[in-house]
Length: 268
Image (cartoon, rainbow, N blue to C red; front, side, top):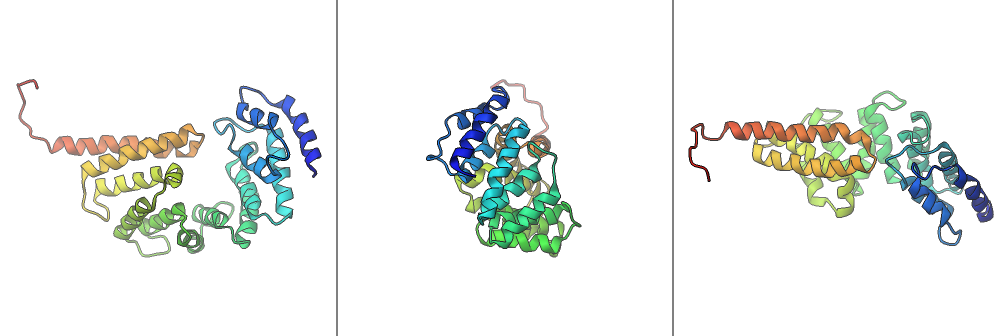
């Protein structure tokens, strides 16, 4: 598809977009100039827009066409991102079969993110039987290359005894290593889930000496990061956000139980 064809397609799409539903997408497409963004860059930016709203089908179809052309040109990130569209189900029904197809295509081209995504698919059984050995394999590829989500998922496997021998202490060490390696960019998607795991471990003494005070701090940090994730459209983390809030109540209950029982009669 030529740049002129993209421009013509955009002009046809614009009248179909609702300004209240897709304000960011509208602004991006109205300002689009072929010299400013390549087709893949345009697709990448569009996929980030209006994440708290469902994607209109006309935009989804446009993204599929943009990514598909890049896939034919050998762009492994386009393969991965097209798989992510089907995995997330924004603008379409979730289709794990198509997601796995494109993740696998990108993974075979060396894309670490796609390998991590395949790890999730095998870990949870997305369009395939659960296979913890293959999940561990794909997570390990990402973890060795600095992908912190892959690393904390390996921690989960030690925590639960999936494929590897159950070892809560090793899981805790891995979660702490994630915090040690955390960058500001990674914290947006990684810090919340990791602090939540640390909070549970510290509250229950799972792989580490129990500390309700340290657990409370971890749950509070988890809540802050997870709130931002949910507010940014990552609704699958609502359950984790609730767990962080509930964890604080449990930690406070333990701390309150340890306080002196006598009544204080002097107001300070």
